[in-house]
Image (tube, rainbow, N blue to C red; front, side):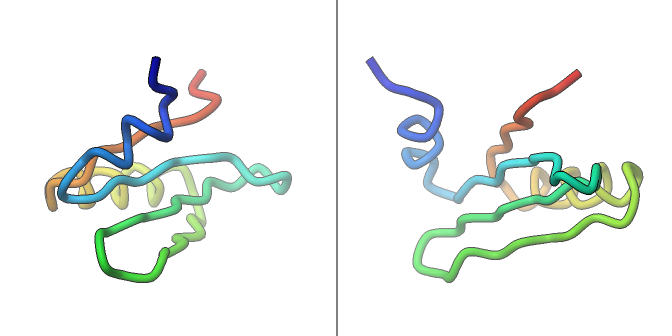
Length: 68
């Protein structure tokens, strides 16, 4: 059986994970094949949503941990 990390690694276009930092701000970790890992520090929930939509439009698969 696969866990979520194994499933995300199977995505050809890459993937991203949205997490909440201890400060309460969203942090998006982006993994694209053949590129270094990228971290997007979001200044607001709206910024996080815009970044998430852009990454999805680029073909990446996303996972929002601790979604409410």
